[in-house]
Image (tube, rainbow over the protein chains, first blue to last red):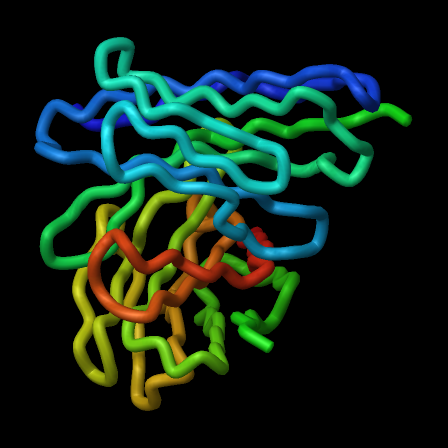
Length: 115
Length: 114
């Protein structure tokens, strides 16, 4: 079936360290999946961090980046140097649906950045 | 300011009681969504609304119904709540159909059914 698997949290890193949150997907019934990273800061709703709709392309936002790799079915989220304000829950999502904007979400990865 | 609001933020109900969760958005978005998230699972789509009185089941609609009488409001109703409906519920909206439009989410409602 179609699914998203991501790093199970919590993930704890120190400020200024690098970060990678793994995301792999299965899109057996989706011809042209689109890939997203959403972030949820404490007390707030999910908000779009970045999206990539074409395989082979890289998306970036707020110092985060992710490359849509169709060969490895991966969309890992990376940041070279995290800040305490990056502490949040990160969700990888697979988009599909010709009749609507449907998303399949991963479970979310809680990131805690130590000062 | 683009915003999706949810009320209430926290709710405790007894099994068999009716539950009303409300969602509002100030962006005139046509499409709205209800999701739930349980521990160890990703957000799961309950219902989509494409506009006023134009609702469609998502992946897990059983035990829920929705109402959209105004474009800016979308309600989720649980008639006779069950303990397995304890969850965090998220509402979202998007400008239109299609993947190029991002979804904007509310802060969530934590529902506990005893």
